[in-house]
Length: 429
Image (cartoon, rainbow, N blue to C red; front, side, top):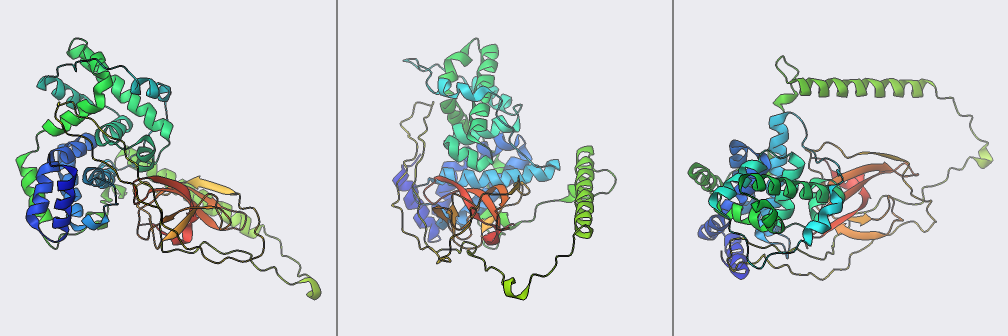
């Protein structure tokens, strides 16, 4: 594999339109990206489509790679979103990560397992056993193993990408590792116990040796070389499964019935509230002056700040390759909008709800402030660049009746930021 400096040079050349430079990037990462997509979707056809779309998006958006983030981490992050949409559409239901199951307490224990002086010998048949067994794992375990162990995202970054908490990531990572080790113990006479400290490296070796079907390579090359190819993220999600025609799956019908029932309940509650209101007697003229609002929604700002950090990976194959280095970008000052000078009331949220639909991809309309509380009086934590995708963790309404989102996003330096931003400046796509 080329050194990181050579990869950066290839990216610069590809940005200038040199097709041979992007072809070299494709030849360098095609096996690992296809393996990542194949293990995520557990389906050959879905993996082929997601791989193709990921490289199409990559070639047209190389300038969007955050400073300090490697090409592999960036393209795999995009591929995960594409895979999640594809899986939700084909299944007829959202793909979610389950809550922590208690295994999270063993995470540090597995991280600190002692390693033997000599690495255990792994056969091709052992790699095939691991690959076949990953297909049988739950979505939660597969996602955590591939994003955290294979690509090398940190626990916090993985949690932000999956839209869950850190304990869930640790629990499913531990559960996946232990399940693979147990399977290898059964099929390879105790090899799993020896390999347990080396599981992330074992997965990286699987990714470098996993064969990419020739037709997938040819179709991917043809797709990213078509100049007028649509942006994969702009494609509408295939929602044929939402049709109420006969033949819809039982799960789909149940979901539709539940949604319809919730709509009816909400409508009934609104009607009861509306007709139950009492007319308010007007106040005397001398005391009828209405108080003016003391604060406004947070305004978007133009500058951003971030700090980059990246976990390093290791390779079981014994080569001298090392995980891509990360760089630290200096935080930049950002402007703050002028707010009313009158004191603002406490902005503790009064309502909360679960994040909107899983397969929507919210993004900031413009650059805006991320705060530690739902209101303009909250402390500014960071700046979300305009157009950046965010994950909505919670919807809240503060005591002023303003709607805010609790969101997480990965900043330009690869660091996960979590806080509140005004719903007015978040576009749900």
